[in-house]
Picture 1 (cartoon, rainbow, N blue to C red):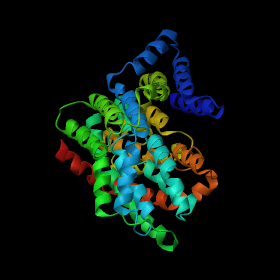
Picture 2: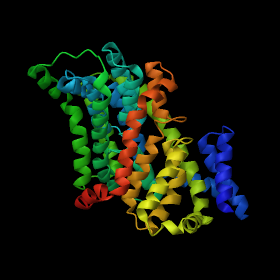
Picture 3: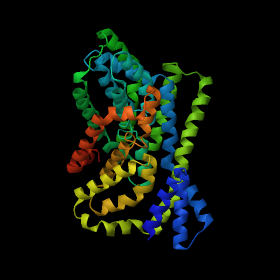
Picture 4: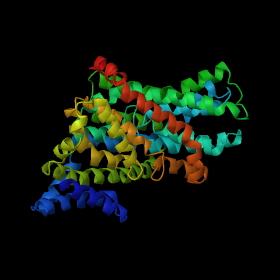
Amino acid sequence: MALTVFLSSLFGLMLLGMPIAFALMLTGVALMVHLDFFDAQLVAQNMLSGADNYPLMAVPFFILAGELMNAGGISQRIINLAVSLVGHIRGGLGFVTIGASVMLASLSGSAIADTAALATLLIPMMRDHGYPVPRSAGLIASGGIIAPIIPPSMPFIIFGVTTNTSISSLFMAGIVPGLMMGAGLVLAWLWVVRGMEVKLQPKASWAERRGALVEGLWALLLPVIIIGGLRGGIFTPTEAAVVAAVYSLFVALFIYRQVAVKDLMPLFVQAARTTSTVMFLCAAALVSSYMVTLADLPQQMNEMLAPLLGHPKILMAAIALLLLAVGTVMDLTPTILVLGPVLTPLAVSAGIDPTYFGVMFVLIGTLGLIHPPVCTVLNVVCGVARISLESATRGIWPFLLTYLVLTALLIAVPEIITGPLHMFR
């Protein structure tokens, strides 16, 4: 009965158009009423605890780092480097998109920020060189969702905090599947570009490539610093976020000099607005998460799925189908906050590695960012490219299909993730 109250309250409030944060909070209240111990003070305490969390301090700093990277020219130099290396080959701007997506993913950890930067810079270039805009939009959106998988990743931070999973382990475990996503896009683009008649970029000289590399070197050093610091135990993920923000500020102000001191306040305000949205979601989610625990919903889920507990791969496939369905109506962060605390104990009881499960949870959840109707990332590209969502949806299907095949592979062979993770441990 408690599970019915939880699901009907949450999805009922969402269908009424209520913002997800308030829907999460009121779902917790509905469970309180159902269990007959409503206490307004308990709601306030849980909301405060949801935001008062040290690891979550990484979120505002990574958001700020992303704002500084885009405004400070770091994203532009990453794309310039990719253009100089592969822009001249057939379909080169598509490969530039994929390469830049992987490199930017290792800098910001935000799918929307990376996608906006890529779309703003590359859509006009691809349109001018004869690339079909819907297909280009689909590729850019697909590349943008690599950001939540390759560290640093804000969804990994939220998942780690919500489910008490090691954030450092999630970061390390995301490297291989993130690179596989990039490789999958390369294969899909090779197939897509066969019939395209496009203009080629002029081939860059070695001097131009060397110049682009030197210009982009400061940007390329950031992921080395973050991954090296985490792997070497020099700093925690939260401290890594501070390092990323300070480093981005230094490069934007004193190296590339595309941001002046007077430009900082609008950047700080924008980062604060984005942070407030995420943190309020986390605060409200703890109310429902607390009540989910008290109502013993994970145990009820265990009983429902008991026949699958002895078959981890089948259980993982069932959870994947559930997450794909939820992704059609819910964004990634709310999906993590709502289902993470419910499904993670279930996965662990079935013998699934919690870090592997966290990576797969986020990876599958990101697919909802590019398939309708929610498709937040795809909508960003549509806005920049000025095309309809229907056109972009037609353009994205080869890349979405590639990700689904990759997901199936990672479910069938979990050692692809857990094997390298043991080496890091």
